[in-house]
Figure 1 (cartoon, protein in one colour):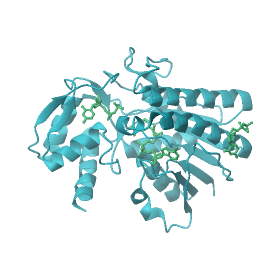
Figure 2 (tube, helix red, strand yellow):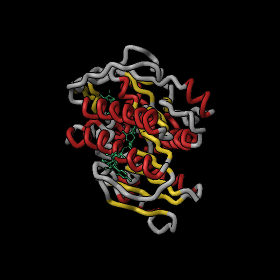
Figure 3 (cartoon, helix red, strand yellow):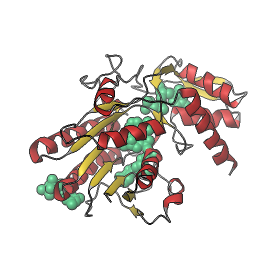
Figure 4 (cartoon, protein in one colour):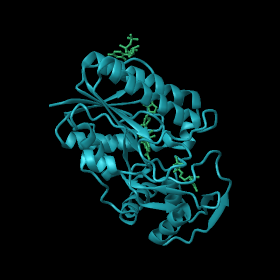
Length: 312
Ligand code: NAD
Ligand code: UDP
Ligand code: UDP
């Protein structure tokens, strides 16, 4: 039985990953400081004999014996990562150093949840892994973008310098049950607003695009990436190439919730990327992976989750 550490394990993606690791028969150590994560996301796992929860902040050293590390700890929504930007950079950078130090000492394979934000506001479309990106180093998103970029640098330097077995994926916008209802991301915002009959907040003119991946598809990609042979380091894009404008997303959410909500237009946040779509050629080649859940089906699951959450 593999002993697997998931940092950020009580968050949206981390809790789904813990579910999958437990289902596959692994000994799973979930670590979280509960900044954006919640015990509710993992409460159903607490009584499982192979599941363990630890309250810890990855910016501090961690000494445990472990075979694999999935490093997911980091707030992911702009509202949350801009709340305490210094802590966000520390989480990515000091967190990466500590987890890489842990991997170095234990010989564990280590996975990094990087992001499409490393491409910034991209000039290349769709984005390939070879694209170096266009990131503002001093703007309000920089704590997240540059923190994640520096974490990638650390991963590749530990790989080259200390021969660490690294796996880096760049995640594109992912949604599904257990997203935080107030985390400000577009899918959760639109669904919560539509269910409550509140105005749907479109930032800018709504013509900017994103490509939305359903959480189950993404987790399958994580598992396949972690199972690749040692030489496969990534970075590999994981996301759904289906690309939509925010106006299209709002229309779909309104239709699927039968909502009477109206659209309102608000200022576009600084440095908001205009378009984003993953090129997933490498994921297909190396992982034999591509997403299976289309946006409408994934939204239905997510809407059902939020309806239940808001009624509880
Ligand atoms: P999330 O906010 O739900 O999860 C992040 C988790 O990390 C939370 O449980 C939080 O409490 C925890 N955390 C934050 N700082 C920590 C610290 N210093 N020490 C320990 N735990 C800490 O977000 P998510 O969507 O589940 O994102 C998980 C990872 O995936 C993040 O690294 C994020 O950058 C990356 N990612 C997510 C997406 C997406 O669309 N969901 C896209 C790109 C990258
Ligand atoms: N570290 C950790 N757990 C370990 C080993 C290391 O948290 O089991 C941390 C420790 O804080 C250290 C960092 O990881 O500073 C980087 O470790 P590395 O061995 O690369 O560097 P060094 O110990 O020389 O600073
Ligand atoms: N967005 C929006 N209304 C909202 C929240 C977000 O129009 O209530 C837009 C946001 O400006 C961005 C897109 O939706 O263009 C995706 O935003 P999100 O915060 O979900 O992710 P990210 O910008 O990090 O990709």
